[in-house]
Image (cartoon, rainbow, N blue to C red; front, side):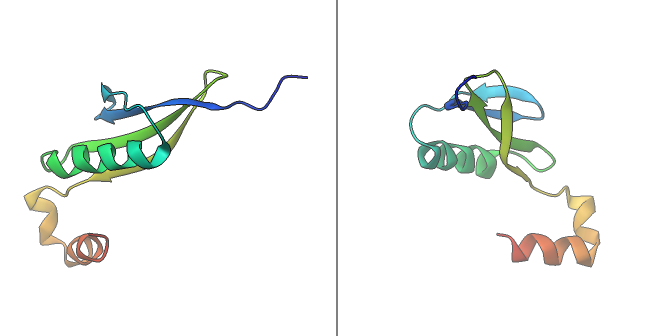
Length: 84
């Protein structure tokens, strides 16, 4: 019986392309992911993945600032302001 997979690292991706592999704890990777997400232009999706020893990965967080045209929707505006 194989052991339980462990987290071996993290991956930050912008629109599916890896831009950084933060080292350290999940909290440290989260700080780096937040900085990348805050600096990303509108419309760019920024994901944080946990990488496991068995080759699998798990989405741990994602962020995407709305495009100006998406602000026209009051529902989208209310959602974004609530989750800032």
